[in-house]
Image (cartoon, rainbow, N blue to C red; front, side):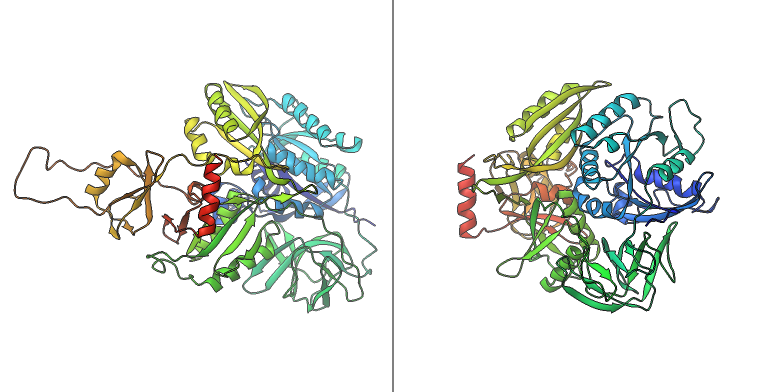
Length: 616
């Protein structure tokens, strides 16, 4: 059975190809936002970090109504998904809720790594995407070339004949128009709405409204008033507030029984309580205390859980522990191991791509995720909530195949760079055990490089990449597969400058230390013994004294009273700091500062590090 007046679609694309801007226009032109009413730019990016970085991190649902001349009034549930590969776990869950997808591709950049990743997931689920070539109004847009690239991508991913026969739209989300061809009038988004209603199937439901209620929970969030809120698409039945339902785990075992306190539906930018939800609709349910993502919420008579798609495993992990430096507890309010543990496990409940395990001694927690950005966003959120943490160097998660061969995660790396810098980039990455798969000119004096390489080869490389390309290069990465371990890879080449004492850094001392390397701190900052205050120009670590003041005498001499002029320090962001450190170093994260420090390794870790250095 289907509800012909309903459509569920997801918007999928590579990061910065215009998904959230497109949703803004769909909301305006459908009337979901009243004409003349104030609406923030990129309204769906409600998280502070999303707005600061201009990326979507959490998948969000909205809903619009469109009065089609042929089909009448139709409600379209739209899910805005993340575009960065590190948040691919969000995309994988969301696609199970929808019956179609809008695949947005930048008409200048073309198909990128995340485009390939999300499209492969959509095709595997049997979805038939509608291709939207966005930003065709850009000066260097080449929609014909990009359309050929997209078709080749569909074919390489094993799309069937129905999927290969995809409809194509040309659009500019910023200008607010879509068209069926490049010569058509560029008035509004009506062609996109009509194409969605025509080509996306209405949701199929198991039985009618009187069938036993069933829904698969795909997202989880915490509300200070309603508690746990689980979102999913209703497969059967009509849930009502006040009814008692149960939650089943993936294996069919009972998780809990609970009385539903509220059922919320997505209407425009708001989530409104409703008295009854229809099969096929996407709703949020409050009232459960233990149910989580991938659980089936259902009527008491149901015995079988709804099957859910497996999620790709994490590829990178860090150890997070309480901050135990001499400056601990001065800036944050949440410093206890117990509080940190609760916060990490709460994150893992709602994000299936995050995995948290306790260390044997119980004072540290291994947090595994998809990449440096995902882990960095988690730590940044905790920092803003008042936590103080110590974070270790990231390491990749390996596994063994049936023959006992060690496998490590590999990534597809796509780089757009000026022609003059392409040789240096290729040289650096091949030294890091990456292999060049493709190299082609993209016009405008730029070259696109496609490489395959180990995930660990890219840890800490991005800063070096920006230096080598004078800040003009763009690098995108996406998990590819696990392959045989590539052996030792050379890490950071420079040593660090380590403070010998505790106090406040003195300008005169930093001025004298500038010839030794690059400073990470400025005068007046608190330092302590073992804290890393800069990068050594040579490959060895060096103990230095940033507290040494100028000796005052009553003898005046030429040059003695020259003003101290310091070079501005290099400030490392949280992600840069985590990628920069070595195995015997930690990042100290507080609400106000990011510091680096040396640690004394355990004997077994010292042996392991010495062996790794001996192997190159």
